[in-house]
Image 1 (cartoon, rainbow, N blue to C red):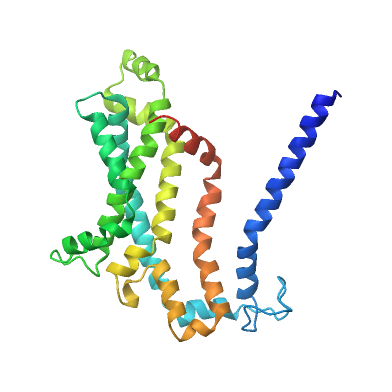
Image 2 (cartoon, rainbow, N blue to C red):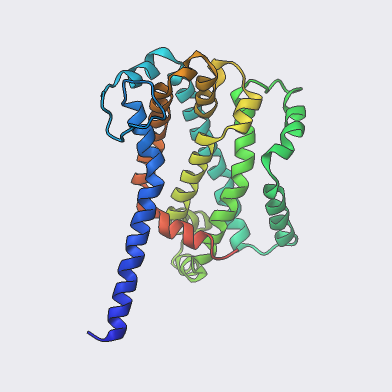
Length: 281
Protein backbone atom coordinates (compact mmCIF):
# COMPACT_ATOMS: atom_id res chain seq x y z
CA UNK A 1 0.00 0.00 0.00
CA UNK A 2 1.37 3.38 -1.03
CA UNK A 3 1.83 6.21 1.42
CA UNK A 4 -0.84 8.28 -0.39
CA UNK A 5 -3.46 5.55 -0.08
CA UNK A 6 -2.55 5.08 3.58
CA UNK A 7 -3.08 8.78 4.26
CA UNK A 8 -6.41 8.72 2.41
CA UNK A 9 -7.52 5.67 4.40
CA UNK A 10 -6.57 7.25 7.72
CA UNK A 11 -8.25 10.51 6.76
CA UNK A 12 -11.46 8.69 5.76
CA UNK A 13 -11.44 6.72 9.01
CA UNK A 14 -10.95 9.87 11.07
CA UNK A 15 -13.78 11.58 9.16
CA UNK A 16 -16.14 8.66 9.77
CA UNK A 17 -15.28 8.63 13.47
CA UNK A 18 -15.98 12.37 13.61
CA UNK A 19 -19.39 11.91 11.99
CA UNK A 20 -20.22 9.06 14.38
CA UNK A 21 -19.26 11.27 17.33
CA UNK A 22 -21.45 14.09 16.00
CA UNK A 23 -24.36 11.67 15.65
CA UNK A 24 -23.98 10.58 19.27
CA UNK A 25 -23.82 14.18 20.44
CA UNK A 26 -27.00 15.10 18.56
CA UNK A 27 -28.75 12.07 20.08
CA UNK A 28 -27.99 13.15 23.65
CA UNK A 29 -31.13 15.38 24.04
CA UNK A 30 -33.35 12.61 22.64
CA UNK A 31 -31.81 9.98 24.92
CA UNK A 32 -32.13 12.40 27.82
CA UNK A 33 -35.84 12.95 27.13
CA UNK A 34 -36.38 9.19 26.75
CA UNK A 35 -34.66 8.55 30.08
CA UNK A 36 -36.74 11.22 31.84
CA UNK A 37 -39.96 9.83 30.36
CA UNK A 38 -39.20 6.35 31.75
CA UNK A 39 -38.23 7.62 35.19
CA UNK A 40 -40.69 7.29 38.05
CA UNK A 41 -39.14 10.17 39.99
CA UNK A 42 -39.85 13.74 38.89
CA UNK A 43 -36.24 14.88 38.60
CA UNK A 44 -35.03 16.77 35.56
CA UNK A 45 -31.59 17.82 36.75
CA UNK A 46 -29.72 16.12 39.54
CA UNK A 47 -26.16 15.23 40.38
CA UNK A 48 -26.86 11.49 40.25
CA UNK A 49 -28.82 11.53 36.96
CA UNK A 50 -28.28 8.52 34.70
CA UNK A 51 -29.44 7.79 31.17
CA UNK A 52 -30.60 4.42 32.48
CA UNK A 53 -33.57 5.10 34.83
CA UNK A 54 -33.08 3.79 38.32
CA UNK A 55 -36.85 3.54 38.87
CA UNK A 56 -38.30 2.38 35.56
CA UNK A 57 -41.99 3.01 34.79
CA UNK A 58 -44.42 3.36 31.87
CA UNK A 59 -46.94 5.34 33.90
CA UNK A 60 -45.84 8.60 32.28
CA UNK A 61 -46.85 7.32 28.84
CA UNK A 62 -50.14 6.07 30.29
CA UNK A 63 -50.74 9.52 31.78
CA UNK A 64 -50.21 11.11 28.37
CA UNK A 65 -53.06 9.15 26.81
CA UNK A 66 -55.42 9.23 29.78
CA UNK A 67 -54.81 12.57 31.43
CA UNK A 68 -54.54 14.96 28.47
CA UNK A 69 -56.24 15.57 25.12
CA UNK A 70 -53.28 14.30 23.12
CA UNK A 71 -55.50 12.11 20.93
CA UNK A 72 -57.51 15.19 19.92
CA UNK A 73 -54.31 17.09 19.20
CA UNK A 74 -53.05 14.10 17.22
CA UNK A 75 -56.25 14.00 15.16
CA UNK A 76 -55.98 17.72 14.37
CA UNK A 77 -52.32 17.40 13.37
CA UNK A 78 -52.96 14.35 11.18
CA UNK A 79 -55.81 16.13 9.39
CA UNK A 80 -53.80 19.31 8.80
CA UNK A 81 -50.64 17.45 7.78
CA UNK A 82 -52.40 15.06 5.41
CA UNK A 83 -54.57 17.74 3.80
CA UNK A 84 -51.65 20.16 3.44
CA UNK A 85 -49.44 17.54 1.81
CA UNK A 86 -52.20 16.54 -0.62
CA UNK A 87 -53.19 20.09 -1.59
CA UNK A 88 -49.61 21.36 -1.82
CA UNK A 89 -48.57 18.54 -4.14
CA UNK A 90 -51.77 18.86 -6.16
CA UNK A 91 -50.91 22.49 -6.86
CA UNK A 92 -47.11 22.25 -6.96
CA UNK A 93 -46.57 19.25 -9.24
CA UNK A 94 -48.29 20.64 -12.36
CA UNK A 95 -46.95 24.13 -11.63
CA UNK A 96 -43.38 22.86 -11.20
CA UNK A 97 -43.59 20.86 -14.42
CA UNK A 98 -44.99 23.85 -16.29
CA UNK A 99 -42.25 26.18 -15.04
CA UNK A 100 -39.61 23.56 -15.87
CA UNK A 101 -40.75 22.72 -19.40
CA UNK A 102 -42.56 25.79 -20.70
CA UNK A 103 -40.99 29.10 -21.65
CA UNK A 104 -43.62 31.84 -21.40
CA UNK A 105 -43.48 35.61 -20.83
CA UNK A 106 -42.98 36.55 -17.18
CA UNK A 107 -41.79 33.08 -16.17
CA UNK A 108 -38.61 34.22 -14.44
CA UNK A 109 -40.35 37.21 -12.88
CA UNK A 110 -43.05 35.00 -11.35
CA UNK A 111 -40.45 32.59 -9.95
CA UNK A 112 -38.51 35.47 -8.40
CA UNK A 113 -41.65 36.92 -6.87
CA UNK A 114 -42.56 33.55 -5.38
CA UNK A 115 -39.11 33.26 -3.82
CA UNK A 116 -39.34 36.82 -2.51
CA UNK A 117 -42.77 36.26 -0.96
CA UNK A 118 -41.56 33.05 0.68
CA UNK A 119 -38.39 34.66 2.04
CA UNK A 120 -40.00 36.84 4.70
CA UNK A 121 -40.43 35.43 8.21
CA UNK A 122 -43.93 34.12 8.88
CA UNK A 123 -44.39 36.42 11.86
CA UNK A 124 -44.32 39.51 9.61
CA UNK A 125 -47.54 38.42 7.90
CA UNK A 126 -49.41 37.41 11.06
CA UNK A 127 -51.46 40.61 11.37
CA UNK A 128 -52.37 40.75 7.68
CA UNK A 129 -53.38 37.07 7.62
CA UNK A 130 -55.47 37.56 10.77
CA UNK A 131 -57.29 40.51 9.21
CA UNK A 132 -58.04 38.44 6.12
CA UNK A 133 -59.29 35.35 7.97
CA UNK A 134 -61.38 37.02 10.66
CA UNK A 135 -64.14 38.40 8.34
CA UNK A 136 -64.39 34.96 6.74
CA UNK A 137 -64.95 33.28 10.10
CA UNK A 138 -61.82 31.16 9.74
CA UNK A 139 -60.25 32.03 13.08
CA UNK A 140 -60.40 28.98 15.38
CA UNK A 141 -61.21 26.88 12.32
CA UNK A 142 -58.97 24.21 10.83
CA UNK A 143 -59.79 25.38 7.32
CA UNK A 144 -58.11 28.73 8.01
CA UNK A 145 -54.95 27.04 9.23
CA UNK A 146 -55.08 24.69 6.23
CA UNK A 147 -55.19 27.64 3.82
CA UNK A 148 -52.15 29.21 5.49
CA UNK A 149 -50.14 25.99 5.45
CA UNK A 150 -51.04 25.16 1.86
CA UNK A 151 -50.20 28.65 0.62
CA UNK A 152 -46.85 28.54 2.37
CA UNK A 153 -45.77 25.03 1.43
CA UNK A 154 -47.08 25.05 -2.15
CA UNK A 155 -44.41 27.61 -3.06
CA UNK A 156 -41.68 25.57 -1.37
CA UNK A 157 -42.90 22.40 -3.07
CA UNK A 158 -42.97 24.12 -6.46
CA UNK A 159 -39.36 25.24 -6.21
CA UNK A 160 -38.06 21.95 -4.84
CA UNK A 161 -39.74 19.84 -7.52
CA UNK A 162 -38.98 22.24 -10.36
CA UNK A 163 -35.28 21.68 -9.73
CA UNK A 164 -35.83 17.93 -10.02
CA UNK A 165 -37.92 18.21 -13.19
CA UNK A 166 -35.07 20.23 -14.71
CA UNK A 167 -32.76 17.22 -14.28
CA UNK A 168 -35.07 14.88 -16.22
CA UNK A 169 -33.91 14.82 -19.89
CA UNK A 170 -36.45 16.20 -22.34
CA UNK A 171 -35.31 13.53 -24.81
CA UNK A 172 -37.18 10.89 -22.78
CA UNK A 173 -40.45 12.77 -23.20
CA UNK A 174 -39.81 13.36 -26.89
CA UNK A 175 -39.12 9.65 -27.42
CA UNK A 176 -42.39 8.77 -25.67
CA UNK A 177 -44.28 11.24 -27.87
CA UNK A 178 -42.74 9.70 -30.99
CA UNK A 179 -43.99 6.31 -29.78
CA UNK A 180 -47.52 7.72 -29.67
CA UNK A 181 -47.88 8.82 -26.03
CA UNK A 182 -50.06 11.84 -25.40
CA UNK A 183 -49.15 14.77 -23.11
CA UNK A 184 -51.06 13.30 -20.16
CA UNK A 185 -49.47 9.88 -20.62
CA UNK A 186 -46.00 11.44 -20.84
CA UNK A 187 -46.51 13.18 -17.51
CA UNK A 188 -48.26 10.37 -15.63
CA UNK A 189 -46.30 7.39 -16.95
CA UNK A 190 -42.87 8.88 -17.69
CA UNK A 191 -42.21 12.07 -15.73
CA UNK A 192 -43.98 11.38 -12.42
CA UNK A 193 -42.41 7.91 -11.89
CA UNK A 194 -38.98 9.42 -12.56
CA UNK A 195 -39.75 12.29 -10.16
CA UNK A 196 -40.94 9.98 -7.38
CA UNK A 197 -37.92 10.67 -5.08
CA UNK A 198 -38.50 14.41 -5.27
CA UNK A 199 -42.24 14.06 -4.69
CA UNK A 200 -41.75 11.80 -1.67
CA UNK A 201 -39.07 14.02 -0.13
CA UNK A 202 -41.15 17.15 -0.72
CA UNK A 203 -44.19 15.52 0.87
CA UNK A 204 -42.06 14.47 3.85
CA UNK A 205 -40.70 17.98 4.36
CA UNK A 206 -44.20 19.48 4.14
CA UNK A 207 -45.39 16.91 6.67
CA UNK A 208 -42.57 17.75 9.09
CA UNK A 209 -43.26 21.49 8.76
CA UNK A 210 -46.97 21.14 9.55
CA UNK A 211 -46.34 18.61 12.32
CA UNK A 212 -43.94 20.96 14.12
CA UNK A 213 -45.47 24.34 13.22
CA UNK A 214 -46.17 26.40 16.32
CA UNK A 215 -46.65 30.13 15.63
CA UNK A 216 -49.73 29.96 13.41
CA UNK A 217 -51.23 27.08 15.41
CA UNK A 218 -51.15 29.02 18.69
CA UNK A 219 -52.20 32.34 17.16
CA UNK A 220 -55.20 31.26 15.10
CA UNK A 221 -56.40 28.28 17.15
CA UNK A 222 -57.44 28.56 20.80
CA UNK A 223 -59.09 26.04 23.06
CA UNK A 224 -57.72 22.59 23.76
CA UNK A 225 -60.09 20.95 21.26
CA UNK A 226 -58.45 22.98 18.47
CA UNK A 227 -54.81 22.49 19.45
CA UNK A 228 -52.30 20.78 17.23
CA UNK A 229 -49.56 18.66 18.79
CA UNK A 230 -47.06 21.52 18.89
CA UNK A 231 -49.56 23.86 20.57
CA UNK A 232 -50.78 21.10 22.85
CA UNK A 233 -47.31 20.28 24.13
CA UNK A 234 -46.77 23.92 25.01
CA UNK A 235 -50.13 24.01 26.76
CA UNK A 236 -49.15 20.87 28.63
CA UNK A 237 -46.29 22.78 30.22
CA UNK A 238 -48.49 25.79 30.95
CA UNK A 239 -51.01 23.81 32.99
CA UNK A 240 -50.80 22.04 36.31
CA UNK A 241 -48.95 19.23 34.53
CA UNK A 242 -45.95 21.55 34.16
CA UNK A 243 -44.54 20.16 37.37
CA UNK A 244 -44.29 16.71 35.79
CA UNK A 245 -41.34 16.74 33.47
CA UNK A 246 -41.50 12.96 32.91
CA UNK A 247 -45.06 13.31 31.52
CA UNK A 248 -43.97 16.15 29.26
CA UNK A 249 -40.97 14.12 28.03
CA UNK A 250 -43.23 11.13 27.39
CA UNK A 251 -45.60 13.32 25.36
CA UNK A 252 -42.72 14.76 23.32
CA UNK A 253 -41.36 11.28 22.55
CA UNK A 254 -44.83 9.98 21.65
CA UNK A 255 -45.62 12.69 19.10
CA UNK A 256 -42.20 12.29 17.49
CA UNK A 257 -42.61 8.59 16.75
CA UNK A 258 -45.02 8.84 13.74
CA UNK A 259 -42.81 11.27 11.80
CA UNK A 260 -39.71 9.26 12.72
CA UNK A 261 -41.27 6.08 11.30
CA UNK A 262 -42.30 7.83 8.08
CA UNK A 263 -38.81 9.33 7.77
CA UNK A 264 -37.11 5.94 8.02
CA UNK A 265 -39.53 4.44 5.50
CA UNK A 266 -38.67 7.22 3.01
CA UNK A 267 -34.97 7.41 3.83
CA UNK A 268 -33.82 5.79 0.59
CA UNK A 269 -35.36 8.64 -1.40
CA UNK A 270 -33.77 11.42 0.65
CA UNK A 271 -30.38 11.71 -1.05
CA UNK A 272 -31.55 11.77 -4.65
CA UNK A 273 -34.64 13.83 -3.88
CA UNK A 274 -32.81 16.58 -2.01
CA UNK A 275 -29.64 16.85 -4.06
CA UNK A 276 -31.24 16.82 -7.51
CA UNK A 277 -34.02 19.16 -6.38
CA UNK A 278 -31.54 21.74 -5.17
CA UNK A 279 -29.08 21.77 -8.07
CA UNK A 280 -30.90 23.53 -10.86
CA UNK A 281 -33.23 26.51 -10.54
